[in-house]
Amino acid sequence: MSIAATIEVPQTYGYVLLSCVIAPTVSNFVMTGNVVKARKSLDVKYPNLYGIPGFHKNADEFNRIQRGHQNAFELLAFFIPACLVGGTKHPIAVSVYGILFSVGCILYQWGYMDTKHDVATARYKKGGPVLRTLAFVGAIGSVVSLAGSLLSWW
Image (cartoon, rainbow, N blue to C red; front, side, top):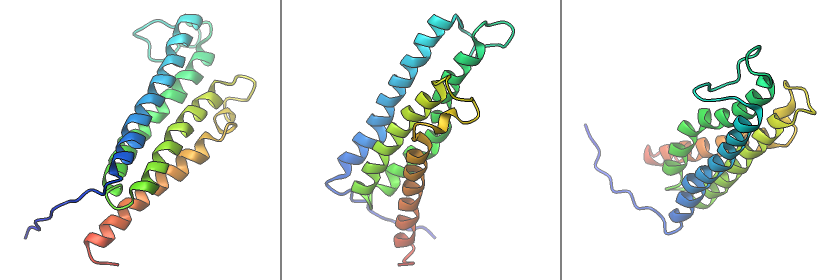
């Protein structure tokens, strides 16, 4: 059995596209810039994704910056599709989630980069994980809300 459906996107769906596609792209450019600068200043050449302790003098410092950037990619594969789908029902809320997520990713990296703090806790010092988690849970919740509506659960 198949269901034919027409999806109407709300007039405010453009905000979803701006905040959940464009904003993460911009935040990625910001984080990439930090990695590129660190590569140059800390002498970690391509093709090394990470600095190799014992080989690269500043491996730990570079790896903190790179790890802060890489972590965003681990979430984007789930976050953006959830926003694009959930935003069809909750465009304004999802737009806010997109901005929180993007800012949270940058703050997460900035925290990780801060060598004044222990590596185990540095990423939590600037508030990035809180913002990203709220955004991620909100985006997933918007998909659940849409799914429940499509299934006539509510």
